[in-house]
Length: 285
Image (cartoon, rainbow, N blue to C red; front, side, top):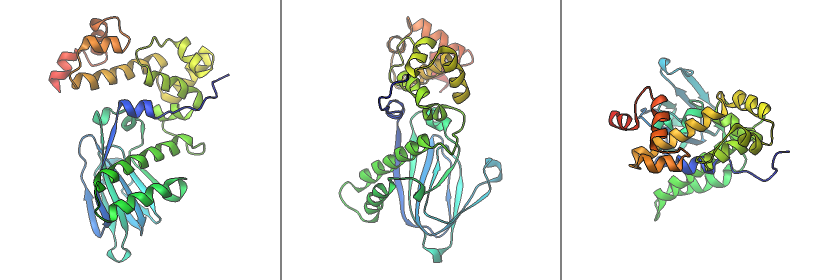
């Protein structure tokens, strides 16, 4: 039987690959407001009152016009230009933040989330307290206002992700979040996220999930779209890329990530990066 101990599915992921919010607008929006796409940057908008229309370029792959008629959260995890059309007489009230994902589009959440989430605030339990604090901070200048507002946006993002993982009537896209939404698979995934350097065999991962090897392997692939072994390798290499950019030596990384030596890590890295060694990959930028 799987372990019934409560599981924190998000902290090991977000402690390793962080998201930084930055408040940049509070108050009504009138007319047309354009938001540019910038590499590694997403947006989190909260409309507290009013109505609006969202527009996207035809080439974006999203619906070109979307009408929002109730207080809602609008989340773009990936860089995507968009326009808000607001009638001045409606006095729509907003707070808006940019979200900077460490490692940009290589951030695991950026890869796992859909390009746009529009969610009525009333559907997500527990937001009222956070929103009351957030709008309170946004409405007048006090000591530490910007820092506190930024942290509250990050709390809001966590609450949104919690809500997504707990839904049963709205299937998540194939990938990491669907895996984390399955509590059996989540135990294995979270163990890998927290302890990437351990010897994660199929047997050990299945044991973490409380499943047989065959059932675990099939369920894992159906949820995430990849095999357990490939997921472990990809997670380790995501960490390696982040740490290499930060200047960590390959030898220290190999030890941390469970490789016998720097040469073993370099071989795996090169195989999965179109023949580029870690040094060549860094030089290429």
